[in-house]
Length: 196
Ligand code: GDP
Image (cartoon, rainbow, N blue to C red):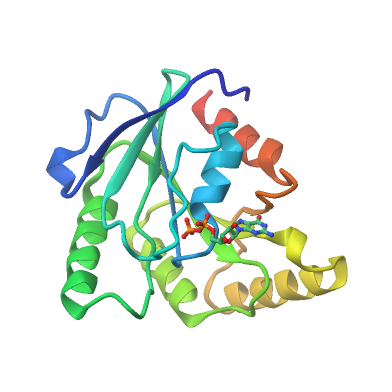
């Protein structure tokens, strides 16, 4: 899929502030600093579209972008940042629970995972929860330019193994880099296929 137009639409602090549900919606989420803003900017060919933040965990908003006047890309707040207050964490959880449970046009969630690390409990639990809710999701491994092929394959294999302990099959996954553009065609192609 070619990106002809990608524009910021609005930020919402609550589900009922989110835009109309007439278009399919694809959400991106992951731990703070996982490379979410960089990935969104890379996918959309638009450097400043999603704000890369030097203060992870700062944004607790649901950010909607319109793409090709056909679908919404949604930048969700990052999870698992130790420095935010307990109150902020609770607020985040309520917002995300509401969104995941109730957003009618939510078509797929892309769960971003830093490819440099071994499987992390917080990511595994998050995906488990999505599964329980019946929300379709895929795994997106980020920053693959930061490690060599062997190490990457080893980490991906560990993830597959971990996922198979809980799931019958491994979810669709993508290996990406905001630096090199790796994974862009695959990921956008996947959205294009679902949208057809
Ligand atoms: P976010 O908090 O998840 O939105 O993460 P950012 O997009 O702000 O990225 C966090 C840090 O990782 C920044 O310093 C980015 O430059 C860096 N980064 C993000 N993606 C990549 C990538 O694909 N490759 C490399 N080498 N660095 C990346």
